[in-house]
Length: 148
Image (cartoon, rainbow, N blue to C red; front, side, top):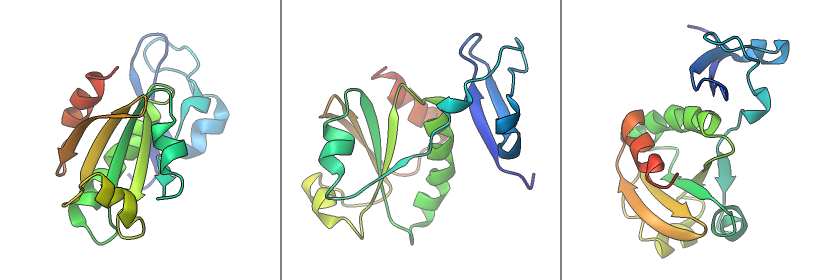
């Protein structure tokens, strides 16, 4: 597959649909129930800095999964596409945020990030859980379902 695909969950039947990015503007429909898919629900992870952390994470009214990563980290690069998919699939229910620990050491230190990737799950500004290591998508989803 040379093209980038976006996973969009159907709001009607819950089916996950893989849509090529170039077809998003054509009004995609669910492959199972044929209901139009919520293209506006497509989201990417939000980049967070030491300066924007409070407004993006702590002030958010719902769950936030903060990925603490660095560009040189191989396991972090393995997790990144999974988080891109989760940002789309959980759009409107969970905010996925990314914090580059090399460029933002204050927040990384404040939350005791000692190895990466580390994912910190927040709900309504409170830290719920810290997950260390590269996990498969279904394990990350299991942690997310605990706060939904």
